[in-house]
Amino acid sequence: MRWESDKNLRLKPERTAERGEYGSDRKLMIEGAVKKTEKILKNAIKETDFVGEVYSKEEVDNDLNYVQKEEESFNEGIMDSEDKRTLEFSRIFEAIIYDQGELANWFGENGATIKSSRFDDIKNGVDLIVEFSGDEEETSHLALAVDVTFSDNIQKKLDNIKREIEHGKLTNIKYFQSDKLGFKGEKRDIPKTVVGADVKTLNKVMDLWVNEDEKRLAEHPIQFIILDEIMAQLEKFREYAQAMKKSNIVEKYDKAIAIMEKILAEKQDLREEVLKDDDSAIRNDRVYQAITGYIDKVSAQKGPKTYKY
Image (cartoon, rainbow, N blue to C red; front, side, top):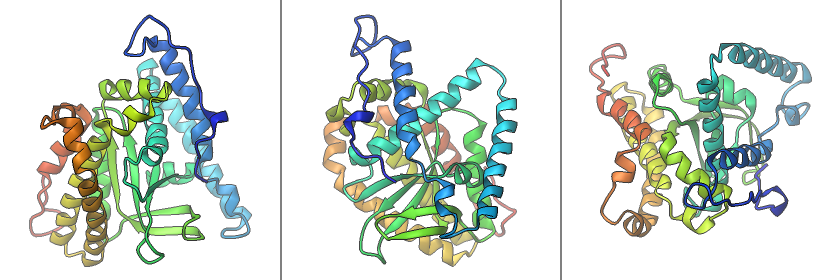
């Protein structure tokens, strides 16, 4: 399941003297990132691996047909090169989080990343799953939706999370596999958050990633953008679930918040060393602004229909 540090999968494009901190030409950098992304994301959970053990061949085939139809419809809706580039960048960022979230310990020493199946990506809006290891009863999971644009897409994803809470449920992952738990099947009611960064932030991280500067990736502020985005959503959606009197969901959020508090405490020294009392690298990211701006406006009143943005 998990892509390991296999040197056969690592690309080392030549560094030129034209542009960028490494002298990497932007076009070559993006091409290198795309190639690396395709190799890494091949390690996604595969629906066909569940045939017989968990689901019937007919059910899996139906899900794969659903994926194909949705992809065809989606591709028809892509309007121009800008749309294509946005999707390309989102996929690259997804691969970077999948890769470095674990290798660079962005999610702490006990955080492992899992790439979701294409079905769960499309149907349930889950790009990645983070597994936080403890013993069998303490192991927890967090679903991530990854975005790289400052757009209405973020609001739609956050709206969906709120809507799920109002209906007393969280995200389900149909095709889930955990080597840690020895589990294969559907994972239900997992808290989901949206994480992202703007293109300016991504370009800086992408250059380090393509050129395999592992030390600077392990210390990059992007991890604090991601962690702060997650924590802000967990706290606000926990508050919203409490207002909606969804005690079962509140418990799920309490557990996720406790895990994130440990990670943030573990990383406090690194945060101070990297940011040096200047969090502008976080505050100035436009996707971070979009997510926190949305969160700041969520206010539950007396019922599920009386909230405002």
